Image (tube, rainbow, N blue to C red; front, side, top):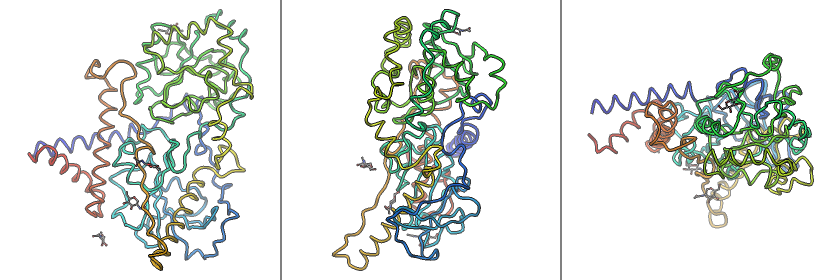
Length: 484
Ligand SMILES: *[C@@H]1O[C@H](CO)[C@@H](O)[C@H](O)[C@H]1NC(C)=O
Ligand SMILES: *[C@@H]1O[C@H](CO)[C@@H](O)[C@H](O)[C@H]1NC(C)=O
Ligand SMILES: *[C@@H]1O[C@H](CO)[C@@H](O)[C@H](O)[C@H]1NC(C)=O
Ligand SMILES: *[C@@H]1O[C@H](CO)[C@@H](O)[C@H](O)[C@H]1NC(C)=O
């Protein structure tokens, strides 16, 4: 009994440590400068964004009558200055706030969480039956595996994630526009071939975040046995950047000199840090922008979104790194076939309708001041849903026979549902038990499930203190092991 408790406690402490140290992408200089994200969150200027009163919004209520949406992750509150704001959305209006004092108020209709910051041990409890929970999670699955488990995602009623199945999908968030794919034109093949003859490898790798759940370096290391790879980042480094590029710490991926440097390469290794359907980042889009062929692993459904059916080499369609290397080598030697892969630089060759429609129909913009950013967009999505729900409940109370009770709405695994991290190359049982990746990520994944179930249990028991989480996890572990 005592040993069991100590074990659970230890697991818990390790987990806390991992959440603090391992949960976020470390921001190192190279990643900062070279891989500056285009995410709307990165450079968001809150002063200039406001909500847009849609033509369908005839809401005449005063602020005092509006439902309240509480941003639990206060550092993401998409308004400035002040802690409370009225938002006038497409169909209705709400008050939004980051002041947690309103948590238990009747008028507080929904609580909005930022996935990366969501912690079971600080969840707002007790969970009131009239309040919905809304999840905004645009970042990597690795930032919070709790959300990838059924009991984790089912805590939420509304979601905005990278998955197309979420309520407010952010799938193409890293692709600013169609223009971004088309321009600039790629470095000419003659020039790329000259660089090859002068000694550049066919393949570029540039990665400085090495210990990640997708375990990409294990794959790349194996691939390097069969084809030359110039690796400039911290991971598997075997080449240094020209000094002047190292120096430009303020340079971004769009910086001209940097662009022309990486644009010389025919192929870019493009492996996401975590694997999940529809999780695609600048790792995919940037090589296309730069006119290079991405050799990609990340979203298993990536081909649904590519410009056409010959614009990327997908690692998972090869049975081994050697087979992939053979394929890349053959493309490297066949000019005509290689150029085929860059055809998407011509507008008429972007033939994927899902991609075109996805870009066309999204209501939020990336670095586009004429459109709301997706934080404000999701906030308004929740506001309109909540007002609909409240109106439907009122109507039902007044006339139950005419207006049926509104159906509850809960998220499920299709809104996130990322798989257990698996080795980048080979099988888990072939890996040394002291391997850093093996000790970290599969455990993180399963401990997140414990957390999700623990929180589910706290809610079921109407607890008010989220600090009781570890106690609930412990009791569940004891029950599972037969109470010894
Ligand atoms: C980097 O390592 C790979 C594989 O070990 C090799 O093919 C490539 O030529 C190396 N490049 C440099 C600059 O050492
Ligand atoms: C919100 O989701 C919870 C499950 O986490 C569910 O019990 C509740 O009924 C849902 N609320 C609404 C209004 O759909
Ligand atoms: C999951 O949620 C979606 C709506 O977001 C719904 O269409 C689907 O049927 C649900 N799947 C399951 C298995 O409940
Ligand atoms: C849950 O707890 C709160 C306060 O802690 C209490 O007001 C509420 O009545 C409880 N709900 C149920 C269903 O017991």
